[in-house]
Length: 185
Image (cartoon, rainbow, N blue to C red):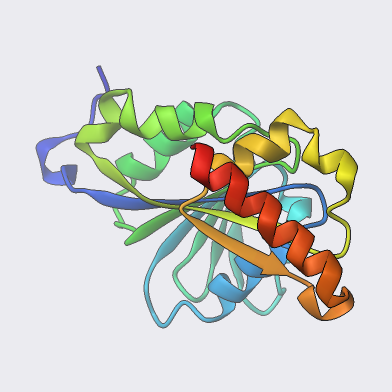
């Protein structure tokens, strides 16, 4: 059982950002951090190096946590997702949202199940799984990838990135593929 004091009991919204390698997950995450409109956001990433943190925003740096001047915190999940989320929930200073950026080759289902199938469901709620698809590099080989299929299937919001770099025919093929996956799921 997760040990969080009753004063910490709240329903923290959790957003998962997923997508294949190079799709634009980190770009979206950086936009969220730069434009968070004074809300305190906690971000979990695989490596700090995945996010180019602006030095002017940096307030403090511990071994696995970075605090930014805009109230956001970033944590690595090298030690495990459950431990990182527990640390965030146990913090004195509350955050208003938790965002998790998965690796580009991750099946998002285990991350989803962490919030809907464990004690975290008492402290958090999964508000969205955002799947970013790079229209330029999403090739027919991705159509056969189990990971890409799962990222699309589990996505609540699908964001097609770099559509300005493909022709209408490529975009139509991709949109048709995505629609077929969503219809099955």
